Length: 119
Length: 109
Image 1: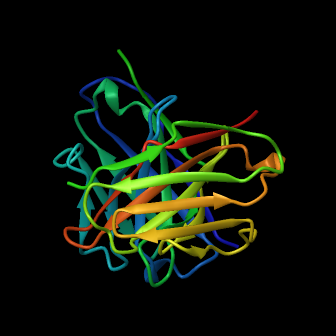
Image 2: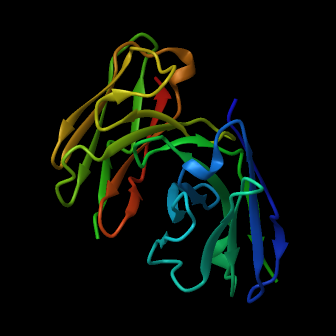
């Protein structure tokens, strides 16, 4: 059974950094690309970052490029999202998602973790 | 940049009725399109990928169609558990980017 569990969220100050983690189990982690999607309160879904299975290639939405960094530890089956220079409009639920094998669709999702940026 | 639009923003439907949701892309996608369902307080769930293929364990009342820039999600007979927000999502090959539409809320009439 595929399981994705995000952690590392909470209330953070503008201008600071946070690292989100997504611990996974139930599948061969190193074989799949992983993705991060966020959802501001009451708003729609926004893709923010992806990382290929080997970890060598990452892709980012223009809105977060330069501030967000996706990484992964294939030995621990964890994917990370480092967010620097936090802004109030980064306030959102952050979901990690596993891609569907052989495609680039988001097949399995974590429950999400809330990051609130506030002074 | 590919922009996704969805219509209508809200769809009021009675249980048992048919619902038709539309998604339009600003550039052709061929069939690189997915549909997701999200219920309040829950993570999204993949319903349809490749424009028309149902994901695992998705009931047959959900179907997707379309190609190019026009796509449709049809729910043939709405069940109480189908009232939710539905998002379309495109995948662009290069550079790899993913874009969600703004969503269609399906509510009980």
